[in-house]
Length: 161
Image 1 (cartoon, rainbow, N blue to C red):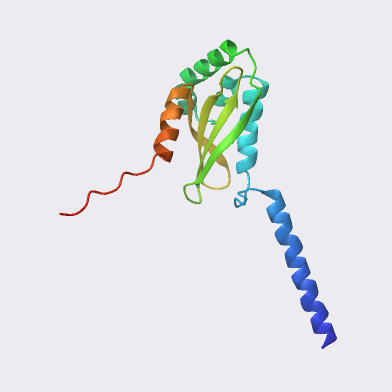
Image 2 (image 1 turned 180 degrees about the vertical axis):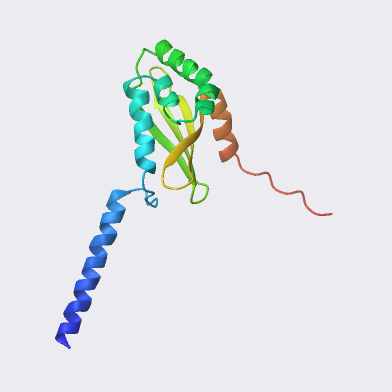
């Protein structure tokens, strides 16, 4: 009987250790998706290290994607030059799973004096996560309107007559 108790306690202890490691790997409690964090980190490594247009150009190997987002890369580089020439980092403020194969992220790319919002849509057909859409928004007044819409109380329904 004692042997069984020791085995059960050991199994429970091992389960607790494994559970703690999975939470430590992702403090936000998001499920770990292989390659997703790496793809996002590579994007931001290029944006912050080389220049935004390089990050955008290398986000997706598809030539049509690259042609579509050439203008966005030029606008991002221009914004960076006008903002002191260097991205100071990035801050994730939204992440939403849109199913097993689609993930949405929203970040602020930090510049002085104002950040720029960067939204990414990632897709996984088989094993590899690919950025399939990028949006850059440098209009803080629009963010203020959106924040106001999300915190404004819903007006009460009119009483039924």
